[in-house]
Image (cartoon, rainbow, N blue to C red; front, side, top):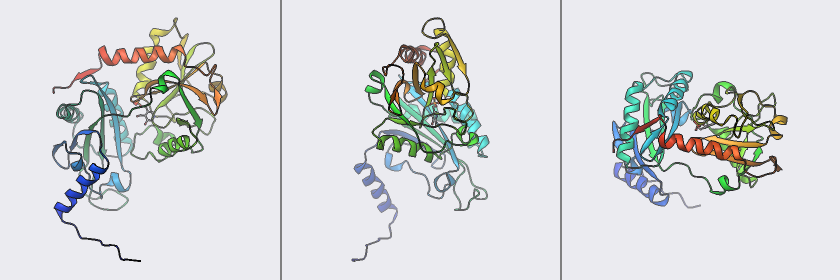
Length: 326
Ligand SMILES: Cc1ncc(COP(=O)(O)O)c(C=O)c1O
């Protein structure tokens, strides 16, 4: 076998390599802030993090994602609340105050010039060693990425999605409610569903209660019209779910009879009138088939549509919007 040529690279070679990578795989990343770099970059080749950052090699980091809608950031305070809760449970030091992080997020969004997309931000425990515990004196890192956002096929909204119960175990409660960078179960669940020709998976907990999907919550409309959501014990407290549980009160007496958060046995869930997928990226989408069985008549229902309308209205004209100073 011929020996592999392994050059020892200098700084310029590395930069050329990073640029070549982005040429092979173009990405829609518009701006990136790094506390380690001390500023914002717009060239995706420069959106990098040191390999020895504890977030990279041990998964000791957390993140959150908020939406950028029409030049405004939607519900950032709810996402920051969750971010700070995740940081505390992960024993991560903050890289600045909440106000400073909010300010950096807004300024990075302004530099991006993007008006619609997503804002994802991370807190890492920092570089300095390859140990299991963070390096002594490691500086926490804060990173913000403004990008095109996740997009889903139009048919999810018009025809509905098809999901399966995943064979992968659900995260224990502490890890489920903490938005850490350890998404292996979520990744495997989504890959498994795609390999089966389906759209996504659903976790079920050890007591037989419905959990959540890969990066979205699930909820139901019962036969008697209750909008029913799983408790936030073994599932991430979705900002979209929490907002919709409040907004949905407007629909009581119209398309729903009540709003309820409770443990949902799989048997109740399978008998639902509607099954819904909720999240910042997907918003509200109807699930019409679960484990190859139709949900009710296998067609998208009116509550999915009504909730989507409520959420879109809140994103356009609600009181949870921050103007980006472009
Ligand atoms: C595992 C998981 N569940 C649920 C959600 C939905 O949360 P949100 O509505 O805040 O997007 C997400 C997305 O952040 C997630 O990653």
